[in-house]
Length: 366
Image (cartoon, rainbow, N blue to C red; front, side):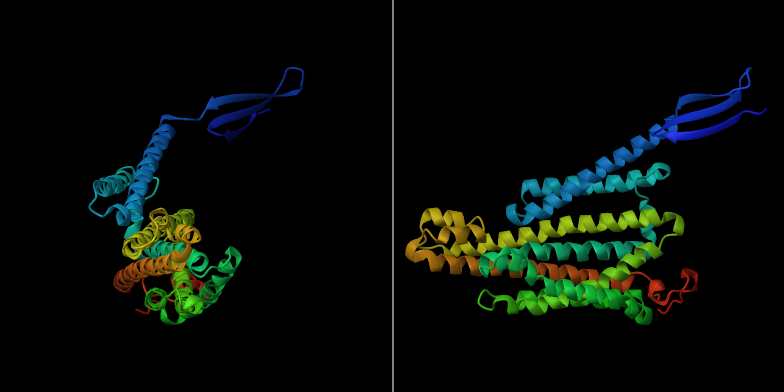
């Protein structure tokens, strides 16, 4: 009788089970444990761990720059040091991943594919802008317009509904004019939406002064997100779809962090710069509190007696000034993304999902 043997791996430990007949005819089992953590496995673990550490340093440094640059100044020592650390770490990450492609955390050479690089950049920017908009909208609704948290959330629904509707239409549009053209249209509309909010926002105009921009942004984001995601997944073969999915998620999260840091900091810096000249005659204590933010100014206004309305007007107008600064910056970023996608974005192929054809049968239209 032959021995029967099986092998199972449990958390890096190999368990070998051997069944053999004994002298008395009974079948007895012997289980042997062997350490499966080979030298190769350890090298892979060290390589990926080092890559992860360097990437964290790069992301932290760059986010600190975007967060503190508008506050401290772009030429402040802390800003420049953080920028240097972030850029050096980012370059080091790329060099390390190219050097250890056999154990890379992320194969950066994949970004030579236009669909992967263009789709990733588009998602990074679009999600960053979307998150940044949320950060500045809620203070506008609550501190400037005086709305409750619930009403402020409901006020965001038109943009969300526009985004959902446009996401469904994006596949059909991509099937007709191509993925890159659909992304260009979406990015352009999102940029127009930010410009509209920068041009027309006002404390007196209330919600209607930002609604057209919200709707344009919602449609633009919906049209750009869907083909961007598809461009990432379609650029890699089936066996690397896990990489595509992970990259898609990481890009969105990283973009969100960058957008919140940049647009939030721009609004705060713009508010503080604007309100400084509007606090003449305001009691010193209330003025110091008002400099910290629009919500602080609204809270402090109640204790200033006859100066309450003056302080509220100053805070509201200063927040609008900071808002406009952030929106124009966002519109400029969307303009740069638009130029990149138009020139170097994914190939203008019809949407594979929309026409339900095999990727190999997709016909290039531009």
